Length: 231
Ligand code: CA
Image 1 (cartoon, rainbow, N blue to C red):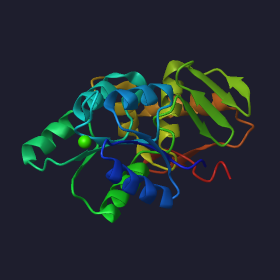
Image 2: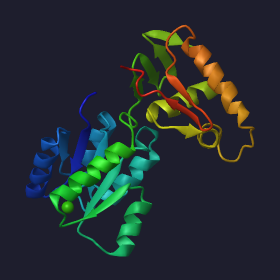
Image 3: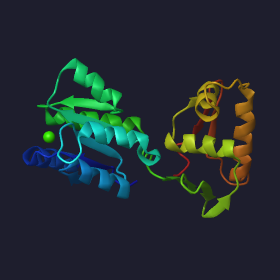
Image 4: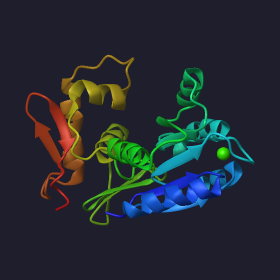
């Protein structure tokens, strides 16, 4: 698996250098922007796996950039950690309200920053912010709404597509039938939990019954994408 790519948007050069050095020491790829508008362009061209975003940036403020990130479909789920000199509780709430996933107050210790980045990368699955989700020989293109297995196109219904998409964003995570209903069908719809089993059955069939089954049934609980599948 490729190293996580982190975009660091920070205009204090010395601090940016320190952060970059320490993130690279963890084996992560780091790209830098010193302006908010520059970071926005970089996000459009090639969304990273995580964004470290300074609150006060020239060009476009971190708060405004974070708001825009959440409004765009391509980046609505991009993990964002806000960096700021402001420590007031109200600002913290405001930062999180704009859609940041986490918030670090300057001055912070480098190990703390690294720990927060690691925790957030772990919480969101690899590739979640990307248009193309891959897992073993499975490939799901979120933009073109296409699924391939070992390069061969598969034909999935819309519900099966969303089911697979959700499973692919969280390999190994076990989803209960209720969670799958909430996230695939939506909270406001009343559907019997057995409907989930029917659609998982259809998804398995569409994936090709003769090939190895990437979906694991967890008895009494629900379903997950089998982490051992790509091996
Ligand atoms: Ca700044």
